[in-house]
Image (tube, rainbow over the protein chains, first blue to last red):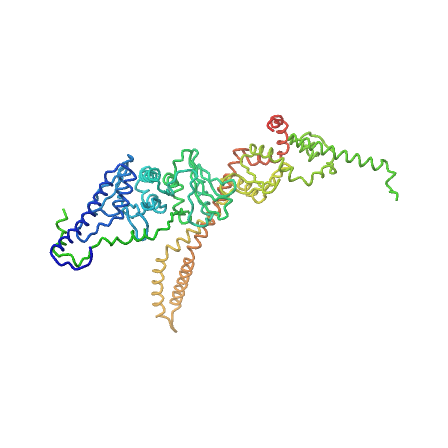
Length: 344
Length: 292
């Protein structure tokens, strides 16, 4: 459409129908994408429909769609559908009519947790948060195809807050489907994933955030272990300490003696590579209590992926597309009040 | 020129020949012993007198320093060479000692494999003996003594610091109570001061002085309370250090009791280490050689 003056009634009608057609087409596209998100059995299609929907701008001056989902919901639908496709149980997406959104509930044990995605200003992707204190447990970024867990939030939520309400096995039941989801993104869709303190590989290094570690902190653990059966061992090169936690299970806090920067890190060793650092905090009160008392010194670094965002990508993300918008002042008054009719 | 020694009992050349022959023999024997890794033989050559006395139970003439000094410049290498079998033996006999070769042939001893284990001295490989760090060794001996009367090494100091911390915490906690008391006293003082003057009774004056002294006592306590938190932190750090030392000493005692039953037996074994080790080499010699 152009901005020229419209002289006749016919001109005005065709102009209006053209605008309506554009709006309806927008709606059709939306419906198609939503249907694809809801029904496709192909992981790649699931990803592309979710990604398109997140960027989708449904605003139209002529056709209004008062009932639609928010970007946060598409993230959640995407996650729910991928888990469903792979037969992963424990989490399900349900409508949350009170807040007019979708929410994820945990079905593996009795609990009141509600999880939603939240977008944050200036941050890529969306954050998966429990809705009581909104700890951002992980970031999901479909555009960059990445998922990264947030160590601080995981510890705040599970170790500081929830450990008193639920036992370690139940809390593990929260983490399990989340890790499965991350691994699915990796294996099915080639995402970059960062499991953080949930990594179970023996060679995983959980780096401390503080640049230096006072050995007094390790002394405290040593003195605590004196009352138990386990002995805190010194590493052969005196570059750290090792705590035996069970048969062939050990946690190490050390630095690489050849590393000039003396970066301290935790490692967790178990023959089956089932245990992450978070699992150690969940299962072993001795380590947990010591960790929480000395958390300032022992906090685990959050290593975030960094991107160099493309310029045009930024434009699309932060300002809605404007080229489809018709000129408002020239629309006939009678044609605009479609609000009531469109609602159901 | 004519040397005045020329007409001695033996011609000089013969003396030289004999001496060289002795040295060559010594070196040849050492060479063979080293090649065959017959460590007990090496030890016998390195200190003939001690070997004769402690292993052969024979009085031998003094060591022939003329030949023994031949290897003076390779003692570090010999020590490194002999250490493998010796440490192998020690790892059985003293399972709680760990060694670090901080320079060729020089070994530091660590007591235990636990956190912040103590460096306990050095291992003298050539003489088959421990050179314990005397400060550390005395602590251990004292800790054994104390444990016999059911006491912990740093027990008294820890108790003292804990009591001091309780007192300081009390000072912090009683701040409000002190404030109230001070207000009360100040009111009393005001009242008493109103009655002073030329004809103040001695009773009133005494009461007034008592109030003032009480007030100044409370202010002293306030002053101490202000720094108490920092002091408590300091004391806690000291308690941590002392507890750590206790823990380490208890692990050390347990190690010795597990292996030797008592500290006295441990000391006896240390005394006999040379003989015990070399005997073990003779007894198990064939086996060990078969391995090499």
